Image (cartoon, rainbow, N blue to C red):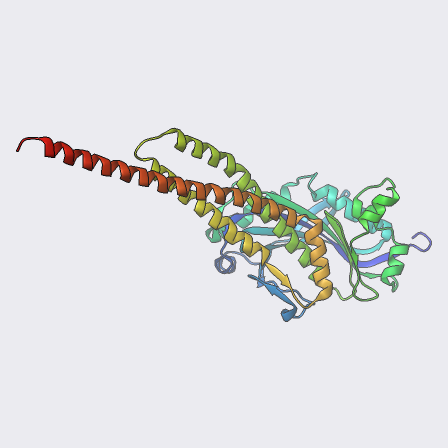
Length: 373
């Protein structure tokens, strides 16, 4: 070990891959199916180190234990613990946990970066597809409108439970270079880039530290609580679901314009029905997306735990969840306006049809009055 270099006595690397599995997941049915068909344990998730009154889950996600997975990382076989957490709004968060013991800080950094190379987004390893396929097979009956080609998000969390000596958070930042671990870069970075990477850092006790970036996080927690990692996973799940709604509306808006133009080009007595059918379709789409978007927003509410609330708020901002949510709201507003316009046109078409019918009846009465008895 190099002179003065910290040694990681115990820790692990968590590789997350989140999938938009379905429109909705019936968690109660999923738990029943898991008990019938699989051997792993299941439990409703809660934050371990945070009092229940300090946080509020909309619907607590369902955590399932999968079969262990053998991986090859940096040319060596690694035994990884596999788990999945299911969210009722359709997200499956798969996690592979790789152990780290008795490593130098340089060795730990290398393990993190090699894990990303082996099972990160650039590698696209088959292990994720295999786990996802098995999950679909076991829980198919609990999936409402399964997604054929699900969107994905990935995240990497490096966790240290203990070093080979006691070290405070401030000293850790001085003695361990977090930048190569958080950036995945071997080349030195500029001072501004280093500051940006280390900007979102948090400590609650003198000897714990959490540093989060867009796609990675480092957590040092001698208490071995998982709350920060769980909150980061939740923020990623919210981002993925909002991305799904955003892309759904991107696909729907051109289709809506085409349907409206086609309906307006055909002027006949059945125009009011076409407008009404299209308006009902848009109203259903807006209602579905609005309902699920609200459930995503309320998936986790941190109330009394100030530290966890700061981490969660920083993650939501860093992952751009609010900006994606705002884009969804704008597109929903366009569809709502289109719905209102179609509703008005349908009402106008019905009124016009009624006026024509009245004029026809008046004409018939006049003609009948002129005919000889």
